[in-house]
Length: 291
Image (cartoon, rainbow, N blue to C red; front, side, top):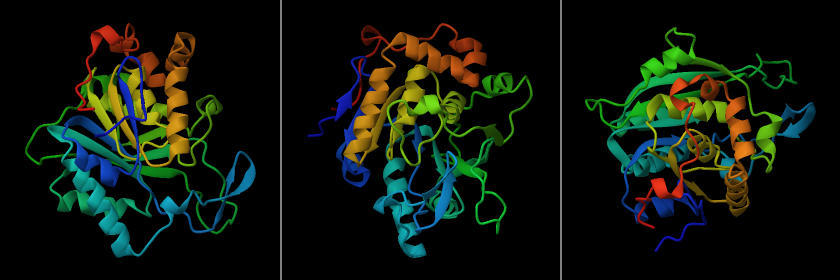
């Protein structure tokens, strides 16, 4: 039987500590949306710049690349497991760079998904290229796909247009990398900014929707989900990052911090439908998870 590593008192945030390849087959539950930030396979002993300091690009053994065949098999396997956890009208978002995104796209199409968009996240504050032998790397890609080619998906088009000054939102999103206030409980080496996850969640889910993240890291997906009234299940293999996730979720039990975080995220601040939303109260929700 699965025992959660952590669950919020309001039961809107559940975290499992373990390998998603082992845990996903152990329960039968369908989610409205999945966000996945899988290994990019960037750890090649190179160097980069972070906060003005030269640092190693190595993230951990989990980010070490293999052969193209090994990478393709890895992506196809976890995407297949996640497909079984999506509702018929559900969608999946997967982030990456050129190191893994083409493999991800091929796996999605082979497994019957319909790719809806490839979002280009243009970072407004990218680190400099210290080798001076390439253009500065300033983008990541996020594939958005639905489970079934002919089953309509949820897209909050009017809200996205409203957030974009009443103009159609394009597939290029200009958003900064994580800010210092997002590192209050520590920093994951591949941590995504809350603003990015909030936009993804607002675009493709309704309030109280269930969201899965099979590579949850420091659970930015879960924090973003709870900030806008959605429910979350994360799976994280590394205990130290599961503990960081727990601290981050408990931090926003403080309503001053919760309101401060919401005020810092442009899409939340501009969204009229969320002006009166708050953390989901225990009396308002019963967890449907089988554990």
